[in-house]
Length: 531
Image 1 (tube, helix red, strand yellow):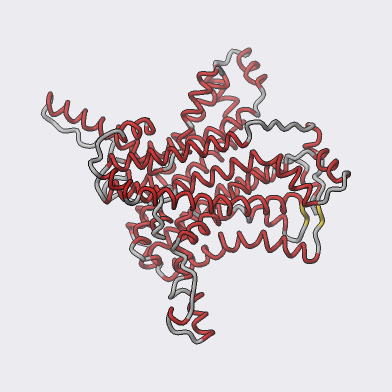
Image 2: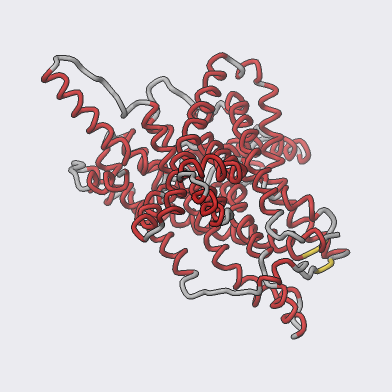
């Protein structure tokens, strides 16, 4: 519905705004977006693949620790790390203060320092927090490699680098392509970072045209252009693995992976490569936020802030519960009935994750507002009363956006858990006289509760971090932690925004821990090949 609404509304009359955009800013938006996506794509590919290979196939001091430490930046939204680094690197920040004290400089005219609030800065910030998408999937692919193929490569005289480039990397390419695509979709969805850094991407242009120029039709036309980007990303990801079919012997999955023992300079280089993303992507921003939160705690910890926490938790919990319920219903229906129609409908229903939050906001507001206006007109005509806003401009619109955007996450986890339950379980239960619903409640739910909990937690945290859709659809005088942080940061009040940012990061650590435990169990006997 949101996608169809955007396409239909984009055909409407936007006055001279679209013509004005084409003549002035539109191609600039497109160019900046392309450069941003290219930079982030290269950054997450290099960081994610290199660290995944090192912790999976090499043995060096601290490797076991880095396995989960490298996931920590996933807990930090891009806009939060942007706020932290701005305080850390700005003129009055600790880095430039130390430089001026050390060299006797007094003003910016005395030295040059890179501007973090730029396109390059946005690429760096997003790359630091989005590389775990590639790291997760690449590491899973490396863990599932065929030991027989790796041993054959070694017997043919290929060293670590040639084995990686000719065997492991091609085999992991489909997983890496999915990880890069996910990171690029998150890049396209980002609004907080690009707005704070004054980097004018398609998302920033959409919000500016909608709210700044007051043209929803113009915003819908930009949203349609963004949908083209999404479709191209999905097509490229599918094409990257279209002709690849990879097979391996089942028994090789349970053999210990042949590892490369590193020592001396090589071990030091491996530690450095793995430590840099963790330090830059998690440790530094968390320390900056903790320091600011401590300084501004009395000013930040207010009844209003506690209300924002409650709003965020309540909305996210409700969205997670709804998404999990729908995912369970659809996944169990597919298990019972199957069929191409249901499979196709499920795929369509889970495409929302690929749609940026700002585009979803346009696509949700249009039909919701039309429904509200229709109901209000009918009530005024026949009953002489006004219904007001029933859907648009209410919490219902925000909840709907959350469920549409993050249903794919819940669906994937629930389907994966159900696939591990043997079909003989269903047959035995039906033979004993249990109906499908009773079988689900008595047998399936206890078996898949771990997967359901993981799905609910990941959806919950993603809803806590979601900014564009929340910012555009929330009711008046209604704030969540994400919008609270954004508003203070937009006013250059980073100290007041720090406690909210730190709270979002703290909540985000929960699914990171769960994901770390899940991926570590991918290869059951990996521990036999470790130190």
